[in-house]
Image (tube, rainbow, N blue to C red; front, side, top):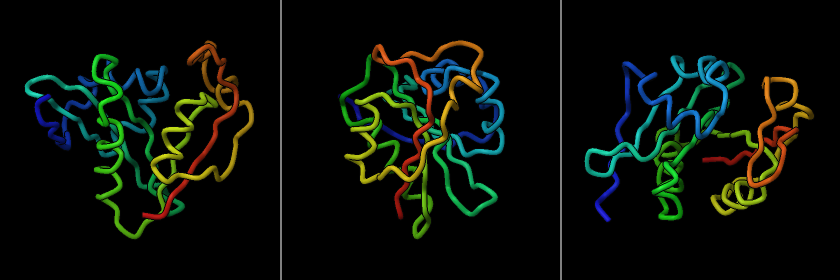
Length: 149
């Protein structure tokens, strides 16, 4: 496999919407954070294979809003590399991320050193106009995990 290179994208972030929609199924929700966030893309050769969006929140937290890897490139360590890169941009900070109750996703983030901090009940049912289903699980609650970098 060719080497993954990660670049920060400053302009025309919307051109990465197909990959961003893997990490967050609502374009409306993505629009809420895309322009104010830092977008990092993972490239292998000329192909964009992963994205992550990180924001600096008013409460002082750094938040990973979106992390997605193209399905053809999963289970190769790319998601972990993207997350590690995002974390490296904010040494000494607390970082958090929210996800649904998909078991494999929760295992992944816990294996990266994140711990559950709190849950927002009914987040997905209240904020999305259609059911979000991952691995056969209909997402309801937003589970926040956090880590000190």
